[in-house]
Image 1: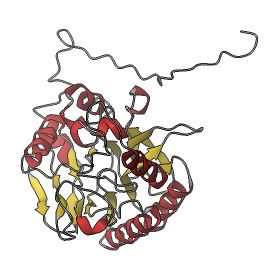
Image 2: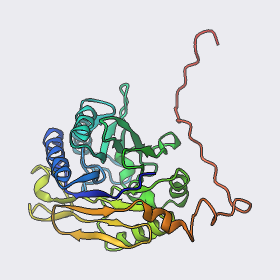
Image 3: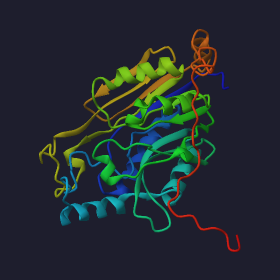
Image 4: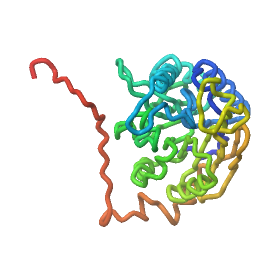
Length: 317
């Protein structure tokens, strides 16, 4: 376990909807800015690359789909990225150049000609390696129209240069068993990319920090209507100054202390000094997968196999 303190950053900014290249350029600028501030762990929001089309229903009331909605999904699909792919190579090189672990939310296209999109969190090491992805297990409400469901094959935490890094996306954080799966892997830096800008999100993050005795870093988008193209139909209206996603990013200590944030109403980069020794201090009296567990009463079993609808047996078997 790393013992010396490090600077961590959560980036509160929004995508440029349906424009992957400009969003990637913005991502690189923001990551370099965080790196100049000394950050060794940088967390970006949910769906930052690929975008979160908040307020649009994709022409899909119950029992009906519109041609306009299908075309909007086509644009969204084209704005998503392949994992791995050219964008992940750029991010890995950037992580190496600035010497920081990076967690970023993306919209991922299924490979091999698939037509499904996934809301994923990608993790990169300061050595310039793509460590892996976490696909959101349970899209929320209308997200289920545009995103597929992840499975247990991407529940792993990752060994970054800063320590053990986990990524739990938005309302996955309300899934107790998923949280336990991360605690059991010894997550030190529990990253929660989100677009949940509600006031009560901060309370959820403090509870998780106390429950897992880990640092919790939540990055939320700040996005206005101006970041979407003119023909994007949002229920919030067409005023370019209308706020679609209002932020609320924060960092919490293993004892539930708010180290920085929540901040709303603007794009910003929040930083905090994290002392990894605070994790052991917190676990003195509470270790949810250790001395405070009761495996004689409760246990949790996780299916980590990739779920595939079609399996081709090898020839001759």
